[in-house]
Length: 117
Length: 115
Image (cartoon, rainbow over all chains, first blue to last red; front, top):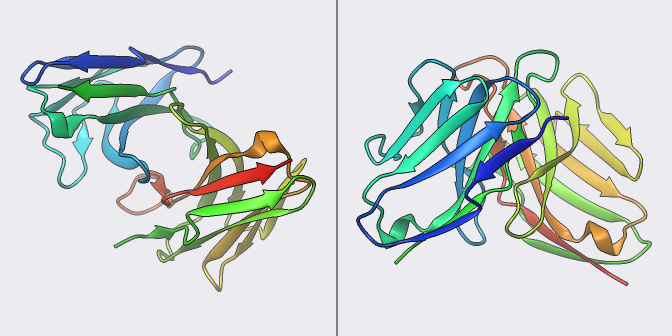
């Protein structure tokens, strides 16, 4: 149980284009989903937190107009990188948290490697 | 200002010996701690956790120790196996306060277990 998938697993795009990354909880309802970014040899940096049906909460320094997050259902959240630039190239990872006893446990997706040329 | 610190970026251990990964935190509001294991180009996988009401939690070869007064926790792996080679992230959360229980991660320690 507690499987989280991400799609695509990798994407290469041209500078200026937009890229959408999907995050799905496959066998549980995720009341909260998180989006992280990891640069090489760095920690996982939380970008934003989204609760189903409400607006995402962005961490300081993360541009909400550039990183659009939609959490339309209890099993799906999307991250759209708008007008991507080479400095947005990174490893993007989502995680999902269910309501209940495992309140503090997050289950991570496999990540999406974004390369912007 | 790093709230969760893993001061050793790497650790090399011989197969069969004990691996000890350390983590320090600064926020006294943290009351739940987790260890994640991560392989390259994959998402982290949950390994073991501990609540602040305990000082030890054991699961098979993995044991996490928590020293609240020192704001320090450690992960012990014994015996270490080559398949344990990965990056280990320490994470902490506070159930109360403005963080909503979000996880704060350390920078990770890369463990290499040599056969």
